[in-house]
Figure 1 (cartoon, rainbow over the protein chains, first blue to last red):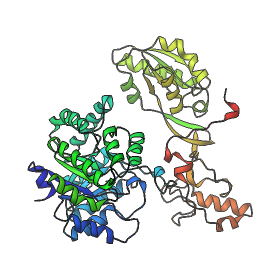
Figure 2 (cartoon, chains in turn orange, cyan):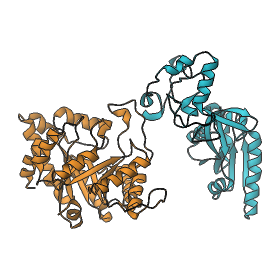
Figure 3 (cartoon, rainbow over the protein chains, first blue to last red):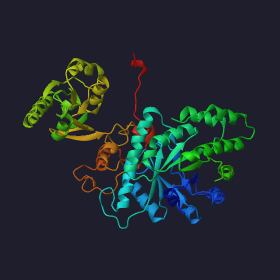
Figure 4 (cartoon, rainbow over the protein chains, first blue to last red):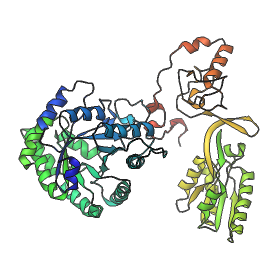
Amino acid sequence: MTFKERLESGKFVVVAELQPPKGIDLSELYENAERLKGRLDAVNVPDLQNAIMRLGSLSVCALLKEKGLEVIANLSCSDRNRLALQSELLNVSALGLKNVLILRGDPPSIGDHFEAQAVFDLDVMGLLGAAKRLQEGYDLMGNDLQGKPQLFVGTQVNAAAKGHVLDLEMMDMEKKIRLGANFFFTGSIYDPGLLENFVKKVAHFKVPIIAGITLLKSVGMARYVNKHVEGALIPDSVIDRLMKASDKQKASVEIAGDLIRAMKPLCRGIQIIPIGWENLIPALLDQVGL
Amino acid sequence: MIKAEQKPMDEILRYLSPYDRILLSGCGACVTVCHAGGEKEVELLASALKMAFRKSGKSLEVLEATPARQCEPEFASELSETIEKVEAVISIACGVGVQTLARHFPKTPVFPGVNTTFLGETVTHGVWEERCQACGNCILERTGGICPVARCAKQLFNGPCGGSSKGKCEIKREADCAWQLIYDRLKGLGQLYRMEEIIPARRWGVESRDSGPRRIVREDLKV
């Protein structure tokens, strides 16, 4: 059963993020992919995440597909204009990849090429609109396409939003659904209460929500996230648990496991974001019986 | 100076449809020079708006003002009393002026009556051309005083592209090829050797708008 079929038939999906290398040595990526084969419904491959120049999402997706893994190609608005973005969506479909996650993308000024020009020719709504029109058989200028691409389109939602930010997020989500979003990935969530509050608010949209679970690698990282990531709230109890643990990796997996168990009834899937600890994913999945 | 052009009447009328008492504010600086938003244009637009309202069986009261520079807070604040009396403002200053009023008068809607188009030069009466994009790091020293950022359609730093014909741009045929102008000028100055230099890729993310809106702070002038 494909990722799309699983979501459409109401089944729970398990996704993991695999970051492309900075360069073309794919050995580590392949090793991780091999380790995860059969355990995931899809591998999510970021596109120049954090504005760090790397191998592209599309080629990694095509290569992982050849190795028998289902993939979710990522496409962000930050680095390409509307010609390149639409062409990339055609590439996704022509390569038989189908699943695509559409993102705003990170401004180059935060990354390792901070002198670069930011593109943002289209925003997420514009790119979702483009994906919709391409699937209907014509491009953004209304030109007919020779063969319609077939895509299964996801985008991001901030499930940790509160107060008026949550109201805005819901308006945003409604627009994204109108523009054809088939599923949503949340950012990293560290407090199941926040997700519960969010899914209750958006239940009427009836669109699958896949929760992001990031492996916390250190107390420093947790504190950094709390300080700098808008909306992220890692509870003190979690930070304490990590601080007291003698085996940080084991504690991190246990914390993620508890989160998955608490969030599984609330959402339609999880995306594990390992940030270098890809080798721990199988143990995490064993722990939660997925 | 900043150049602007009046928006289509239909668009301005659409903004104004819910109101019957407005302030039309021009600006005595750049937009006066390009005949888009000075005192004269305020007068003309006010009459045109009133006529258009009358034609559709409604009435519109238009208070008129043209502060010396709408983008300067002290001039904008001169409008405080007048703005108390109106439901909305149409500003025919540039986008900066519109935002200055919007910031000063949070309870009154402020609508733009012009499209702010570019930083440019008067070529002849009634003709203005783009000359500067405020990119944040002027390279006119290297290009004979002719800006490839503002004037080359491809924004090439190491032109020409090879597509120009008879000195005209291949993308905008009525425009002069910036790199032809640069070549002619450097030749005239005896500085053609400057074309041998490779101008490196720009640091857009550092110098320009790409890392967010820019700000200048002069500690020596702060009060």
